[in-house]
Image 1 (cartoon, rainbow, N blue to C red):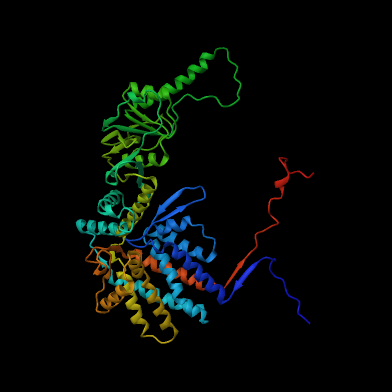
Image 2: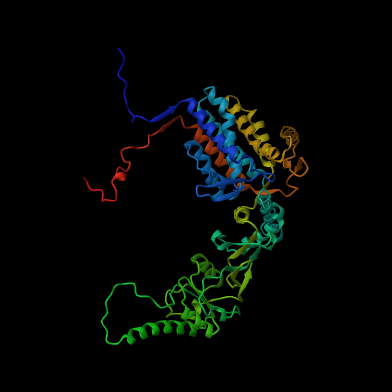
Length: 540
């Protein structure tokens, strides 16, 4: 007699468990890595991704590509998440972290298929990661912070390394200098929000500039604007959150009056009263988040003042940080201490747009990049590349130890872990060996992307590292190996540490899953009122 089957889950529930589903999860992660594999390094290719609305994005940044791919596989999503976390934490190395995680999984796949318990794999990986991180800390080179010239050189080298794999790698020296200047202008907190990036179409990349202060696009203006002066020296700046125009009555209020003039006059008087107060405060430049009407524009023009209404909030805040003062919500307390100051205010033409510049700010803890370039996608990609470089420079200021990039640090760690694995017995030996082998994916991929013979170059690298050439990595320009520390391919040790820990955590996470249960799409809660016409959904 057959035993009655126990139905526990709702029908249509898809549950898979055991080794086959673990292997399928690993394969899914490898597919994700395939998507970004070719973008690694200076010879990496770019991806063009078109979203549902037809907007095209060209990118080389691992995190951007993975964000735009709509990944539905639950296990593969973890790889997208580690790429995002690497982007948020360090800014660069998003492609490497995805590749490493996928390669760790690929190396343990045969062991999983043979039935080795996942917990043993996880334990070995944790040990290996700990050893690798300690080794990085031990061999990283610290640059003296006290010596400003040295520190600046270090930061420029790190920024150049971050930019060398991007679209703008030809101009990396030009941009690296700009990025370091920008980060050096910030205060100790190094807030990203304080660096504004504005894009203006047209012109060449070299026309991009860094403004030590604030620049924003000229706002919508009324008649009378052209009569206002466009340049001031040492002006006082009023930052307002006040509307300076006649209000149209929106409410259906009913007011019974005998003389209409009284109300109309009162309205005009309120406006003129506000304008007079602003004028008497001594401010020469008036910026407001809310609109400034035509009457006010004319009034300011007659008194040689400049005004801009509808300034975006973040620009207003950055102006406040740069020029001092504070944003006022009423005009009654415009004393000298709430007004900002700067040395020069001017409005200039850049490309087809007009921009307002505030330079020579006393409290300048902020700066603005103005990027030029032909196509819009190109400028967006430049912005993403600069974001990576800025993040790297911020990291390098806080952690002043660097390692050599270009696959050098991975080869050194690989050699160290391989040597270590031979000193321990048991299954751990195989697994730490597999971890060591997985680290070689970075130099191997660098070679593949540049069209070199990867096996040949990796053999040379292994031999050189065995002889004690710690910083030897792939030399992209000469299809050979070179001392990348001498070649100034530097990156903050923090980037590598973060990439290793994130990648191994993700690999452990995926290995530790032994069952995937997918609930069926719920049919009960589906909207049933679709066919009812435009009624209120009442029963017939």
